[in-house]
Amino acid sequence: MHIHQELDTRGLNCPLPILKAKRSLNDMQSGQLLKVVSTDAGSLRDFQAFARQTGNDLVEQQTVGSEYIHILRRR
Image 1 (spheres, rainbow, N blue to C red):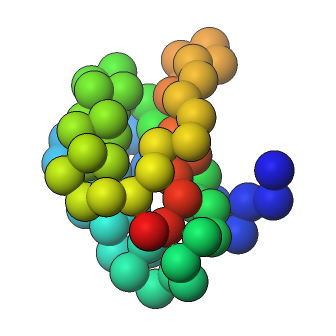
Image 2 (cartoon, rainbow, N blue to C red):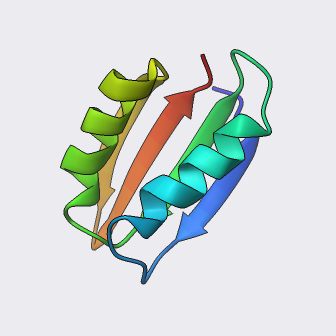
């Protein structure tokens, strides 16, 4: 999987990870992948809702230690 952009939102709480991801996705081309790394446990549910509402594809979510990784495909 080729990640086109990575966004570090460690230490930020809702809604900042979503807002920063939205801004990054707006600057990307359709089909490109954005990786977001967060420490906010609520981000798992937040990114699922964000993907449904925006039409971007939530390709993968994983928890690695205390970090939550979200991979989104730009619509």
